[in-house]
Amino acid sequence: MNTRPFGNTGWNVSEVGLGCWQIGAEWGDVPREQALAVLHAAADAGVTFFDTADVYGLGRSESLIAEFLKDRRGRGGRDADAIHVATKLGRFPQPGWPANFTLAAMRQHCEASAKRLGVDVLDLTQLHCVPTEELKKGEVFDHLRTLKKEGLIRFFGASVESMAEALVCLEQPGLTNLQIIFNVFRQKPITALFQHAKHKGVAIVVRLPLASGLLSGKMSKATTFRPDDHRNFNR
Image 1 (cartoon, helix red, strand yellow):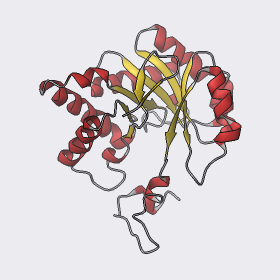
Image 2 (cartoon, helix red, strand yellow):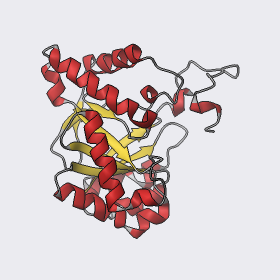
Image 3 (cartoon, rainbow, N blue to C red):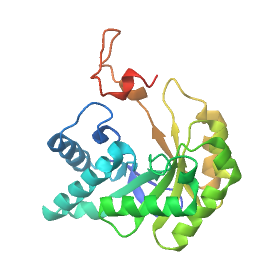
Image 4 (cartoon, one colour):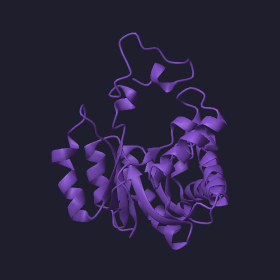
């Protein structure tokens, strides 16, 4: 597995990371044993970057990652110390929008994520597709800088929906990474973002590289999903 420097962190992480939304149960039920097997298989293949969010299964994904890391260390796997876990905040249903964007709520969400992940300090937390107007106001970034000073998070970034949002975030001091949609259908970042992010020293995390499975080669017009799979309604 090749590695790359990750933004301003000093980390070298695997070029391929594992997105952990699917083990939060919004892609159909993924039993605990299967979820842990997926996490271990990724680590066995050299993956050292795992991306999750507090809202994935309302904490289920984070808790499973914690169990996986504990199990890996228990097996004597020194690679567990090289693994970095990125999480997200901003979409948890309690207290909900717009209260989620206060310093108190963001601190509460970070503390809850840290507890579920079994750590004292979060490696990296990212704003989770928060409204454009909140990004433009900038207060959420001030809150993240405060939480970093308090020692609750090491680094912060943002997961965004559009290139316009990405460019707003790039103007924020201290930003570590941007998480964006990029695949053969969505190629705008090549001209709109990549060079600007490189100039700023901001890491890029690609989400939906296989367009939620559409590019996996395993789907056809006849493909159906389980009733609890978000692809039934998330066009």
